[in-house]
Image (tube, rainbow, N blue to C red; front, side):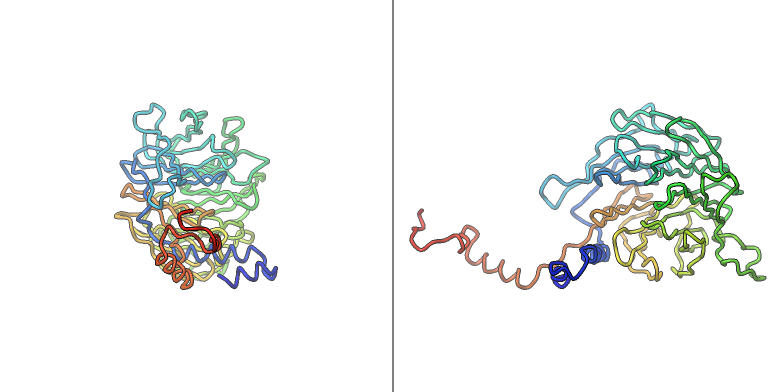
Length: 401
């Protein structure tokens, strides 16, 4: 660390290098923090978490009980022990609450005054945060598994929606209507994700074992259908050509720069794809346990070198190195299956929600103090806490003064 600081001070290194090194160190030291709790509000499993990108202060959670909760993650107490308090709740007593399980919650990317939720009650609701009332409600023919707003879009305000129907719905926030349908999948669409690099690029994952990449400006079908074998046909793989997995594909996540796409499937595999060419990079993550029949929310670190992937795996969260596939560690603390996790890029913290109704905070361990600091503290302790720093003492004043 001192070497990075010296190099930065002398102008030998880009400041970004120090930031990445410290971010990486913090991620590698993630531990379940006994000093931090999150209010337990949900009476059933937690399916989705989202931290807003404007201030990085408020977190949404959506549960299998239909309840939506907003938490304040900021600590104003000045003490290390604190609980992330609930700011407001759309509970069972509200007449606007979802009737069934909330599958996805997401903040509007540019303003905390609005958020969107989708549910197995076949609706997607656009909420006013101030009044906790829906500003708009979209109704669908089947269960809604996933929706996503583009984090970078300036030229459109589309919400991509994956439902039990194989057709992907595109809903426009401005007009309040469904304006387009993307056809190509043959089974329910379990996950949808906009690219954080190009605002018109959308990835979709389905129970038909396929992952498709679309340019929503085109009406002629998908740009790419990801192929786990990279087009190399053989007798053994002839049936699996143009499939991303050998089971249901229930998880999608772009890297922060949008250059790579990660997918998870019920074949207990996770794959890393080049998002521009659709090529399978063939990174081997080993067996990634995945028994979920719904969308699985996993996440990727941001600002580290190398980057890390956080994947729910049974009652633990597995941490993998993105480009090598190495299993770095397993974060254990939940009493039941983990369904979602969300990375906080500002503080390199991780929040995970599970079927045990708990949201756990995984926080970097503080750096151990140097030997020199410890010896200085010991000297100060020996002199006494009320003693004045020698730099502010003089030779002529009496102690009474």
